[in-house]
Image (cartoon, rainbow, N blue to C red):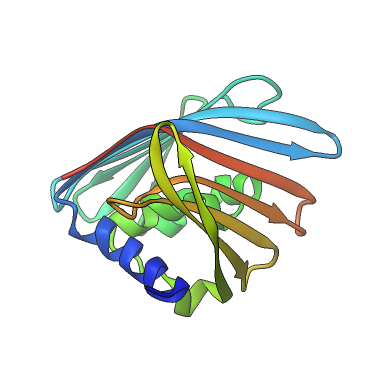
Length: 184
């Protein structure tokens, strides 16, 4: 299987999940310092959606939550409530902080178009490795939004186990690691 096909099948694996749960960490290294966050995503197709980003050391935000309410998304940030018509609009306030690519999983789960054709200019298989005891396929991705990302796809499920993004836009290296990952 080639790199583009792996990335496409990864998006299809998320799209096929009736329910999904993850937990993990997000680290942003910039010249001005390091920020650490934890996150959680929960989705039941057509019923529930929840995403939370909690700030830790050096964090610019302390808490950001997005939930689906009917056809709209509700957001809560530092006690301030908002509504958005789309997930893209709901996560917009954290995109400058995290970059577009690190919000890929919530976007895939909510049915946004995602894959090699609309986000990447090139995808390459770099090799295989083990992440938390699971075999993973490493892909290097050149992004249309700018910069390079590396994805570690679980070899059995093709779900993302880890990702890093070198963002030239905000001179940051963003690392995402999943400590819990369940899809059914």
